[in-house]
Amino acid sequence: MSPSQHPAASDDARPPVYDDGAATGSPQPSAEDGGPFGARPPGTSNGAGRATRRKGSVELRRGQATVPQSDNMLLDADDTKGFTRTDPWRVLRIQSEFVEGFGTLADLGPAISVFGSARTARSSSYYAIGEEVGRRLVQSGFAVITGGGPGAMEAANKGACEAGGTSVGLGIELPFEQGMNEWVDLGINFRYFFARKTMFVKYASGFVVLPGGFGTLDELFEAMTLVQTGKVTSFPIVLIGVDYWRPLMDWIKGTLLAEGTVSEKDLSLLQLVDTAEEAVQIVAASAGHDHPS
Image (cartoon, helix red, strand yellow):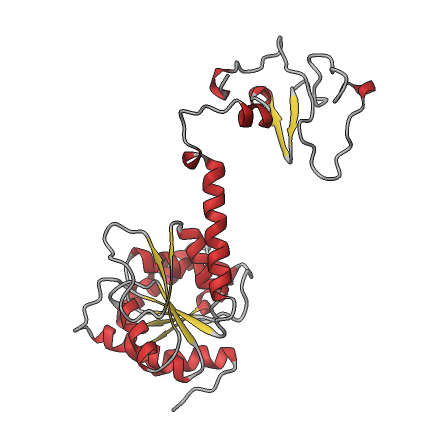
């Protein structure tokens, strides 16, 4: 019987309470109190009149307590649904992405993540700045990490590659991007955004952000949140393009700060500059690296 075929528990028909896989440190019931070798009387509750059942580290109550045991679902599995389409399999896939990312980047050394639009044209002034950012970061002793796509990401990878540094691309499955750009020397492709985002932060000493769209804003605000909440420390975030980013900063000050949803201190999380030299100088100083003149 599948989980959906089991009726929900009611006050008149409460399922027995038992443990089909106690968590570490949990006392194991004896035959005298009803398990595992003695049946507990139906209707046993958690003291609040509610049916309760432990399933490993999970506690199930009310209707949830009637789902089959893990062994039932394993041994009596519905063969019509492939395992690769189940959540446990997805967990293994997610785990494999973290293992692949950690294993590949563990020896990368100091690095800076560079973000920006995939739509930045090669003729754009911001593309040229992106190349200079990549080159200057390498000259300051950093590897360069980008999303591995075209546009501003390609520019930073190109600058790093031509400067003889390590050029990293962390790709993601998207319907409108076509694989890694040609300047990526070390590339990893991800299925899941959250696994990829972890690598951007874990292996970087700071962010340099060129003009971009929703994806760039997503990465920017996540970095800001991690710094604001103390999840990462000494992590500079530099925005290149004062004219591009100033309206965003004005909105943060005029709306968020005015409404009290952020503090004055939070505004210092971002630094606005117009040149690659200024941006690299800031992240290099924060990491204790020398910046070439």
